Amino acid sequence: MLDRAKISKYKLKKLILLFSLDIQADKSTVLAGVNRNTVNRWYMLFRKVIYVHRTAERRKLTGEVELDESYFGPRRIRGRATRRGRGTHKQPVFGIFERNGTVYTEVVPNCQKSTLQPLILGKVAKESMIHSDGWRGYDGLVDVGYDRHLRVNHSKHEFSNKERGCHINGIESFWSFVKRRLTAFNGIQKKYFDLHLKECEWRWDRDYKKLQQELWTLLNTVDEHDINSVC
Image 1 (cartoon, rainbow, N blue to C red):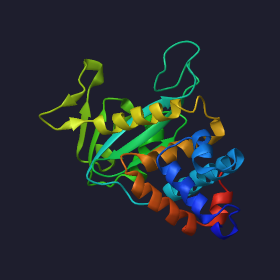
Image 2 (cartoon, rainbow, N blue to C red; image 1 turned 90 degrees about the vertical axis):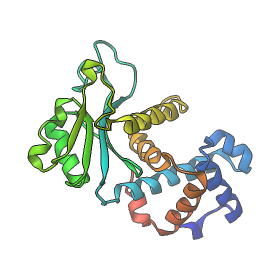
Image 3 (cartoon, helix red, strand yellow; image 1 turned 30 degrees about the horizontal axis):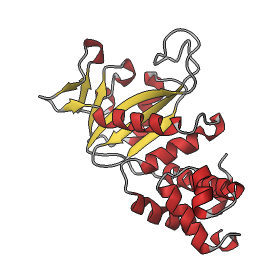
């Protein structure tokens, strides 16, 4: 794939650096001295490569794990944005945060127990310590093998339980990061939302030098057929 690149290796590495620094395409055009359409094409390729890499990860999250959900999209027309998504056009997204580790997200149709529990079973090791809020979508985890499940009751204005070490500050910080970052794009087409979400997973709490090195490696190793199947 890189062998057929129509820009020099120097300029390509420059684009990888700028992308890793989270410099948007319009500024990268000037800084790298590359045509805007070319920058757009490479930035889209970078996001597809990252998406393939993140979705191929099969390792289960372990240790202390936080569960939470968030909502993305245009401002609601009427009513409240609820976990059922009624009265709103917002897209629900489920997140799992491994403390001192990585984060995993998935776009979901709703945040009901029947939707979330299979995702948790597929991604979180049974020996993990799970932290969540009191949403009923997380009911019954003990019954399916998660013996250690601590909950924070937001309805009673409880945001952490210091005595038990229970909180979901990590995943909530991630949601804040994602929303701040996506706001800078002034709107993202729905078909590209997954790409940007997985990119945020990849970027979260990581040094740009590590991102730069990993992206170069991925560009040389990810199967081109898998890239072409994205979006």
